[in-house]
Every structure is written in C-alpha cells, then in structure tokens.
Image (cartoon, rainbow, N blue to C red):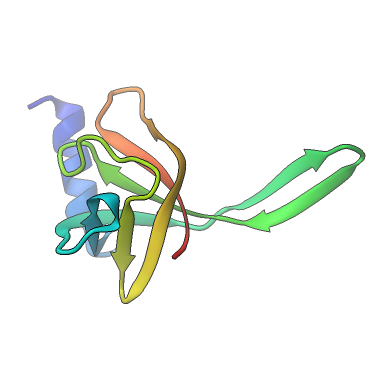
Length: 104
C-alpha cells in the first residue's frame, strides 16, 4: 500500500469527513456498504449569454470499494437515494472516484 492509499483510507475512516452509504449496482438491491465523502458545490454554467447557477451533489468514494461505477447505479446516504449522473472521474492517483448524483 502506498502512502497516498494509506492517507485516503484514513480520510474515509474519519467520521467528520465521510459517511456510511450503500451502493446499488444498476440500482438493484441489496447494496454494498461503502464510505463516501459528500460534497454539494454550486456550479455556474454559461449558456449563450446567460449564466445559470445550479446546486450539485457529488460524492467521493474509494476505487477499492467501487471498481466500475456507471450511470444508473444508486447510492443511499442517510435515507436519501441518489442516482449516478454522467461519467465518474478518478483522481490522479486512481484511488478515488468523484461521482455526480441526482435525487432518485
């Protein structure tokens, strides 16, 4: 295990940063337990001459817990169900997925 992987594991174990969640491949039950770091950044998109503000929901999850996430997969966090939107992105070290979500 690299130093980066060990640091990522510590971050995802921290109860102040990460939460327990359930990943459902293809939206099917039962799911697998995972740890996720939830983010909700505002996003501004230019469309023609207008700028559109929107709220987003994203989570970071470890590649070691979800090998190949795909649009249509679902994640349940604290009773809220979200569906993966768009293509997942991995970090430079290939240790963490960033997933865009929308309410299911």
